[in-house]
Image 1 (spheres, rainbow, N blue to C red):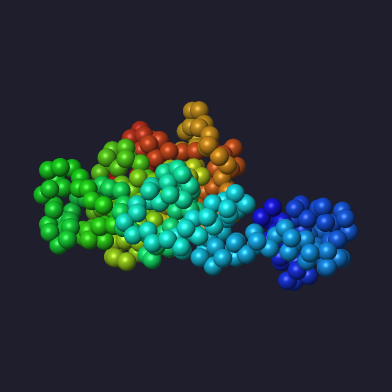
Image 2: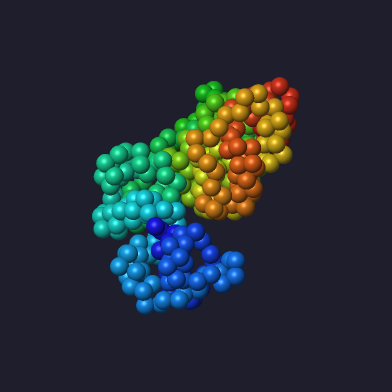
Length: 320
């Protein structure tokens, strides 16, 4: 229904739009007419305007409100959830409310926001005025001198193997390295060793919005996101890349293609890849590759295992 409403709004504004199957009912009823193979024009403007006012206007207004925040729901269900969250954040002072508590207050489920990149992005957009600063813990590893709140913690890092802090304190960290690598999963974070790099374990959707803000506001050198190659993993990386455009994604296309050749039994993603929901052109290309191979997935752990076997080469920012 959302697609239909957006198309009708475009028709009423421009008197024509690109063809879509969502308009077939109107074409068959002669309310609209096809202009060539790819364009549609209006035959009955008054009927279409009345239909829009009765069935589409509320949906369209909600979508337009969210789009002004760079939030673009893909269907009426995601629009309903996003607008419900938006309304709550606008009307309520939520200082001191963490993400899971906020999700429970709005949806009755503590993980609804965490599971949706759209809702997570919306919270990130409105958080500075609407939501308090309570985030989950992240882990840090580094092979060079590193400081937290201007205190040298290099020896602590060496003796403990890692350092932990809340995600909103990442900006207080500084290290004498060229690269900052964001890890989605914990196992590769510990299996690989930093080389002139600071490793940050982000724990997926939960912290990526806050981490992206901290990285954007401070100098952390080259930013690399090491994530799973599946729909959720690409969405997590896309949040970071949309805020820090210089961010690169690993595994890159060449590494992915090598990994695919050495798959003994393909593991399929839980859902299909959707390129239209991704901001990054590089991630869209990766999604297209994975779609061509039947919507398979490649986890970070598999990349590390293939590197340990000498099948693929790891980047310069890490060692086995």
